[in-house]
Image (cartoon, rainbow, N blue to C red; front, side, top):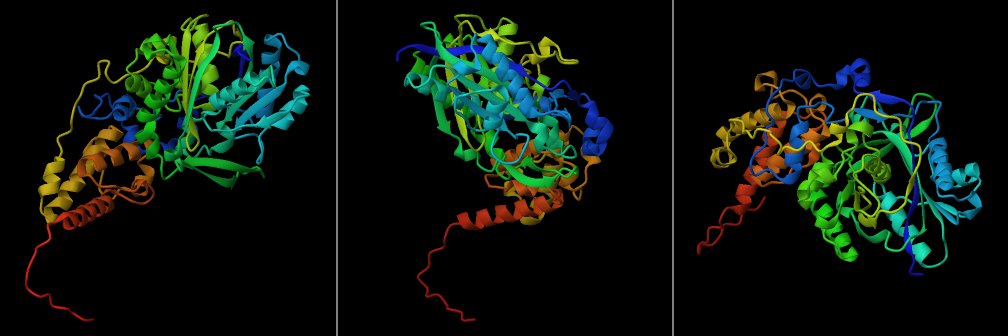
Length: 494
């Protein structure tokens, strides 16, 4: 078949309950480290030579919630499967089809209602499908992987109308006593992929492995306190890989998709980026060198909704007239420990479902990209330079490293260095963002590798300073020139 293949209809469903930051302030105030409770209005601190990720992160260091504002959250009596079914039924009806006309259903439920396989069979049963339905999962890139799978199947002539359902139920995989829960939201989306009018639909898809991000998250089984076992998601030992690979992955996948479609990035009218953090869209903007007015940041509105973001971005872009029929749209998502993918579509006559309920207190302006380059002041704290540390004698070096660590901690936590002591445990002080940024700065300044575990639990600045000094000494001894001598060596026996 040579028919154009595209999105006929698109539906989003979210829980009615919207959880704001006040929930954690009122119920889990102890999660807000003391240093960050004393925030002041200060300029963002970042070095001139900071990389793209650090520049995009900088505006959010002053915010203990790291840009999160609202999340749609399932209540205990609500079912994620019910949200998926609602979206699926609406997408089918909007496309002018019946359940009998659907040839295949592809579903992704990231953190489904129950342990074990996903919702595919249950969804097919609940909405009355008579076709095969199976689970397909590639973390945050699942929607694009499903889109490419659907396109390939339809091109083969085996299927004609394919239903795709993706969902993310972060509240099923977090403990509200863990600050990681601040970032995750719930939601579901569905679309129908079918042959469409000529010169519309999917032009290209580029997918590549994201194996560098394996172990960025870890998962464990836990009792939720209500007699039910659930999977809890935590920050993993390799979380820093998400920062280290973000720029290259976005550039590589988006450029490859553009080349395959025979267009340039300058031709794209709207970019729909997966935004698992408040700054991720800005990272992609900087990496690709594109205008921010062609991008939306839905993280303040929804939190991290994983594979649902491509659908939510497209829906919101159409509603706000950023995406119109005939426009080129590039969708990009990076799935941790899975795949990264980009797709380019010529937007067609896609029918949208019922608009999601508006946010409680987020303006359209807040969905624009908060970029460091827009009026932020560049400062550097007055701390020992890396060169001073490297050239100091071992006894002097330890004190310099302690001062260096406390100074940069104060910068990242937006507090005075006098509020910090070297024996203050990192466990109640650092979240994963600060830990990753501090690790990256130390590794860049001192050219040594530091395990992320050094920045968590009961470790503190004093212990980390000793660890750094030991690593620097080992590095110096290893790189010291070997003294050549013609004298025979004395062999000592123990």
